[in-house]
Structures are given as structure tokens and as C-alpha cells.
Amino acid sequence: MKRRSKSRHRIVQYRGRRYSLKLDQAVWSQLEALAKGKGERLNALVARIGAESAERNESLTAALRRHCLDQVQAQSLALEATVKTLSQTARGAPLALIVEACPAPCLLVSEGHIILNANAGLERWLGLKAADLVGRRIDHYFTIKSPRPIDEIVAEMRAGTARFYQARVIVVRPGRLMMGRATICPGAAGEGNQLSYFVFFSEGR
Image (cartoon, rainbow, N blue to C red; front, side, top):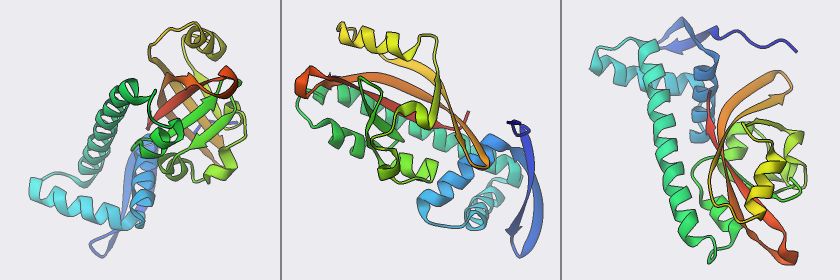
């Protein structure tokens, strides 16, 4: 399968005119995810960001890139806060509830790598329903590339190692190649002493 070029031209409607904008594919993917998450069309999001850019005397493409960067940074901060809360509350709160409350795309996965729960953020990012994900192996949709094989990571969690593991993630869907980053961290042992783990995603490269 051929990978998409790093930059891509797209036609958008802005201030009653059609513009051809050239942006990195990761930026377009982020803009599409943001628009979908807000329930608006991409053109409407571009127009709103463009109105803000006029106040800053900033080009439209620069404003779109800056907006995406601001959103990724906000997601990272929210993810960090969630992970800190998780470390304090995981023993007392249902793990599925933590997944659903997480502002970033998130999965709860069994020790055998079966997806147990997926939140609304992940549904918006992938364009799939949680029902399409739950019960599948995580590698059905995701290729996770980390310095350590996922089985070794889970073995360390099973041995009691409490740490976070960083990884890159690739999602291949019909006509789409999506890339992002992931933070993997231990959940807790549940029924039958089965371990589970969380995967928190940051959209974009």
C-alpha cells in the first residue's frame, strides 16, 4: 500500500471564495477530526479559524497549523491529567468509567490484547462505533510500534512494574492511513486475576 504524500492540496470555501490550501496530511486529518468532533463541516471550522487569524494578521494556513498544534497540546495536557488521576483512582473506580471520562481517544485492553472498552474520543477519531471495536484484538485495527514488544510490556505490568510506555500507532482504514502517538499504562487485575491495560492516543503524528 502506498503511503500518502506529506503535503496535500485541498479546496475549501472561505469568505465566499474557493481557496486551494496546501497543508501536511497530519494537519488535514486533525482538522477533519476536530470538525467531526464539533459536529460541523470542515469549511465551517476553517472559516472560524480564519476569522481569528484576521485579528492576528496571520495567514490562513499558519492559523490552521497553529490551531491544530494548540489542540494537540491541550489534548496532551488533558491526557497527562487523566493519567495522574488514573494512578490515584484506578483501584477505586471502574476502569470502563475512566475510559469513558477520558477526553483523549482511549482503549481498555485485556491481557490477551482484546479490546474491552473504547470511548467517544476514539469513535470520533476513527469514524467507528465502539461496538465495532470491542471484542476485537487490538492489532485488528492498530499497529503499535514501541521500543518494547507489547507482550513484554504486558509481562512487566503483570510483574508489578508501574510505568508508562510511549509508542507510535498506525491505523489503516479503507482509503485512509492515520498516524498518531500512544501512551500505554497498566490498568488493574479484574475477575480471574486477568490484567488489563489502557492505551491513550494523541491524534496526529
